[in-house]
Amino acid sequence: MLSFLAPAADVAAHGPVNPWVALAYLVAGVFFILALRGLSSPATSRAGNRNGMIGMAIAVITTLVTHDIANIVEIGIAIFLGGIVGVTIARKIAMTAMPELVAGFHSLVGLAAVLVGWAAYLNPGAFGLLAGDGISAVSKVEMGLGIAIGAITFSGSVIAFAKLSGKMSGSPILLPGRHVINLGVLGAIIVLTALFALAGPADTLPLIVAVTVLAFLIGFLLIIPIGGADMPVVVSMLNSYSGWAAAAMGFTLGNTAMIITGALVGSSGAILSYIMCRAMNRSFISVIAGGFGADDSGGGSGEPREQRPYKQGSAADAAYMLEQAEKVIIIPGYGMAVAQAQHALREMADLLEERGVEVKYAIHPVAGRMPGHMNVLLAEASVEYDKVFELEDINSEFAQADVAFIIGANDVVNPAAKTDKSSPIYGMPVFDVDKAKQVFFIKRSMGGVGYAGVDNDVFYMDQTMMLLSDAKKMVEEIVKALD
Picture 1 (cartoon, one colour):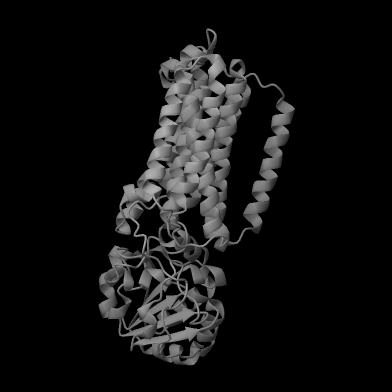
Picture 2: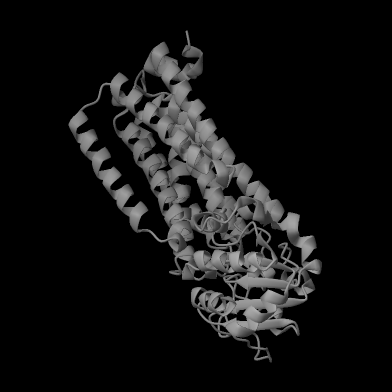
């Protein structure tokens, strides 16, 4: 009845699809769609997470019940141990480490796709892939694509993890002739996959090994040229890759749930990457091609260009001027996440609103190091959603703002993005904080620069007062002064 949900090749390889299994997978797919719909807004994100968990539970239970499992006890133990690891990480991981955690999880999805593909290659009979003397050509193409995409996802995610965690420089690493190398390696993977599909059983091993090795290599080569300012796009892009890897393995295994889930994750990740590229004035093609448009001479040095005069203030100074303001716009960034200052910030905003000050929050699409990082932190601090605005909705209001309160942000308020063509963030839309009457800029010291590695002219503007301290400590002192 519902066998149309499975591809014809899968029906041929694995036999007719049980209609109840297809129905269960269809219901799981509906829950996954509802999960994506819920995750589109902070207000419905909890419901979205619940729907995703329900859908995954239906898919996993259906697969276990309806398939011949070699050892259900071993699988149960593996699921239990994986659950223990997941719960432990969820409880212990700090919000500041969420971006690299996501990158790490993406790498595991990619590696799982590679391992499943190799398991299917080494034991095709167990996967229902035998056709005549060997694996069918269609199954080989599915297997090759799944392994290649999974390997790219794994190695690319490892580099993203290293950059996000500070184990590798966030500056672009530009290899000579990298575009030619990347295109050559990708072309070789495509050609080898075609040869693998057409080769006889005795000739396939060297080809699939070569595809795997080259795919691991291209994952590294695609991500190392991408600078820190573009890392949030990389995270969403790798999320898309992990989805396509899962979908490809779904075709190999003849599993409709994996195909549906992988396609949803892959397409939604690609759409999110495209939206973020548009918000950053970046070319989607150049980012997924590994910084194709990057300037070899660009990039920050990692140190301020020169010592320039600036004005330093205290918490008491900031409290007095904030009380006198009519409109305050707060721009949070990764430094707020590091200091866990969101609760103190909300308390400061509450005190200002009690005194009749209008307070709004401005969120840049790439604030933090992954999409939605700042939104999650503010929601954790119970900041009302209607006070949080995206860049395009609030940027015009800085000209009417008495105070732009920057806490832990840097690159997203750097005017070099608009004026300096050699800057790695050139072309990225930034907040027009220079139009505000007064700017308070909280950062630990003047000795560091932003994640992209470039100095910020906002530090030295006449209306800027630098509040040099840990973000949480400084905001708490401002709260005491307001009290």
